[in-house]
Image (cartoon, rainbow, N blue to C red; front, side, top):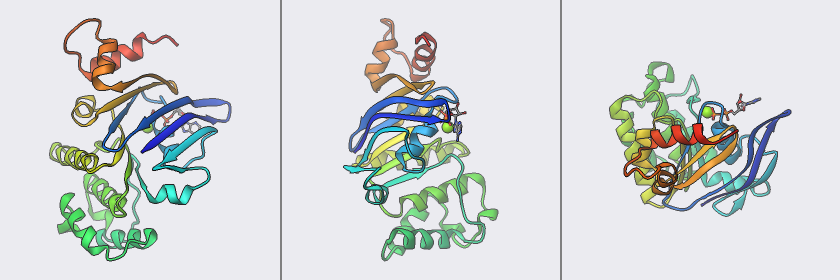
Length: 243
Ligand SMILES: Nc1ncnc2c1ncn2[C@@H]1O[C@H](COP(=O)(O)OP(=O)(O)O)[C@@H](O)[C@H]1O
Ligand SMILES: [Mg+2]
């Protein structure tokens, strides 16, 4: 469960996110969309406890991120758009290291299926410098999933993956949601979000301009038409909303 209440984030005098509130329940996948600079990454970094919010309360699986940060962070995983890896650790050593940091015991039994799910098992003894960008991303994701997080934040997880990689990634996200995880996913690949997300939230200049189930947000911007896809909704929502 993710609960965001009146989140604001200022960088100096600039307001990147303004009084944003939303919730994501178990099994739900929220698509966070908005033009470049809308505040998606800022929102996700605040939610993952990487940067402190300027104001507002954030609860992850019931834990207040401000006062119970460690407990909150134990239940979540954040996947940045650029995978950050250690140059001198192999794929397998990355997983062992992360397991130690998170106190995951007998991690091999968890790591091996993850390596297979993300198709890096045959590269287990390679260093990041010997991996393609997509493989590095998959390794970062396998590392983030090792401690069994119930709350997942993905910032542009599909960038850099080939079509097959994107399909597998979609499957992985959907299977975690079906197992009860609460997920937020930011992406510009709107046709893919449509297949993965149960809900959508549109941000513009740090403010929420629409949110709800895909059907509800579509209805709001459909102007009576039957089938309006997310790309069209996105364009209408960002163009029509005055600011
Ligand atoms: N560390 C920072 N210092 C100052 N401004 C920042 C910082 N990070 C982001 N911003 C600004 O905040 C706004 C939102 O950025 P970001 O959250 O990265 O948007 P998005 O991910 O939606 O593209 C942008 O105008 C960006 O320039
Ligand atoms: Mg971003």
